[in-house]
Amino acid sequence: MTTVLSPDELEAKLRGVGATRYHNLHRFHRALHDGKLDRTQVQAWALNRYYYQAQIPAKDATLLARLPTPELRREWRRRIEDHDGSAPGEGGVARWLKLTDGLGLSRDYVTSLEGLLPTTRFAVEAYVHFVRDRSILEAIASSLTELFSPTIISERVSGMLRHYDFVSEETLAYFTPRLTQAPRDSDFALDYVRTHATTAEQQAAVVAALEFKCNVLWSMLDALDYSYVLGYRGPGVFAGPETPGAFAS
Ligand SMILES: O=C(O)c1cc(C(=O)O)c2c(n1)C(=O)C(=O)c1cc(C(=O)O)[nH]c1-2
View 1 (cartoon, rainbow, N blue to C red):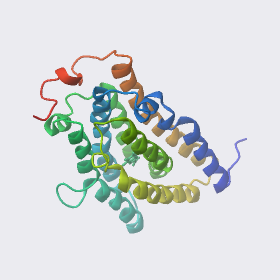
View 2: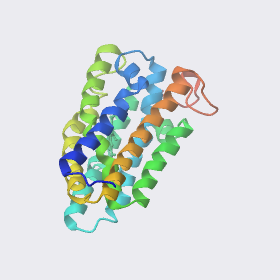
View 3: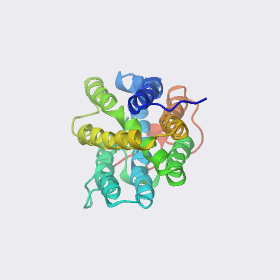
View 4: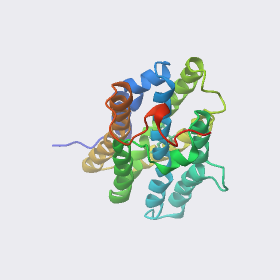
C-alpha cells in the first residue's frame, strides 16, 4: 500500500531529489566553476544555455494560459516579465545575451540557434512540452529545480570570476537578480505543491516531475561534455574559432 506523505515529508523527498540529481553535481559544471574549461568550452556552454533561457518564458506562457485563478496567473505573469522584460533590452533573456556578447559571440549567431547541440534542442523542447501537456501540479513541480539554483549560481559566479580572465562581473550580471527571483519563485511553487499534492498518486507525480526536470538539465550537460570535453562533436554545431559567423567582429 502506498502511504500519503505529510507536506514536510513530501518537501524532504523533493529536496532529496535535488541533493542527488541536480546539475551542480555534473562534472561539466564542476569543470566550468573550477576554471578547467577553455574559452571555446565556456562559449559552447553559454551558447547552448541561451536556448534554455529563451524558451523559459515560452514554457511559462503555456502554463499561464491554463492557470485557473487571477492569483496564480499574476504569479506566473511575473516570471514571464522577469525573463522578457517590459521593454527591449530588459529582462533575463537580454541579460543572457550580454553574457554571450562578453564571451565574444555574435548575437545573430547565438539567436539563430545554428550552432546548438541537437540534445540541447531536444531537452529544452521536452521541458516546454512537459509543462504544456502535464497537469498543472506536475508543471509547477517541474520548476522546483529553482530551489537548488541559488547555491550553484553563487558557486558559478565566484568560481568563474576567479578562474577565467575572459569573464567579468558585468558579463555575469545575468545571475545577480536570479539570486532573489529564484527563491521567491520556488517558495511559491513549493508552497503550491505542498498544499495541492495530497494523494499518494499526486505526490509520486510531483517527485517524478522534479526528477524529469533534473534529467533535462543533466542531459544538456552530458551533451556539452561529450561534444566539447571528450571531443566527439557532431556535424554543424559550434566548433570554436573556425565557426563561420560565430564571432562579433
Ligand atoms: O543557473 C542555473 O543553474 C539555473 C538553473 C535553473 C533551473 O534549475 O532550472 C534555472 C535557471 N538557472 C535560470 O536562470 C532560470 O531563469 C530558470 C527558470 C527555470 C524554470 O524552470 O522555470 N529554471 C531556471
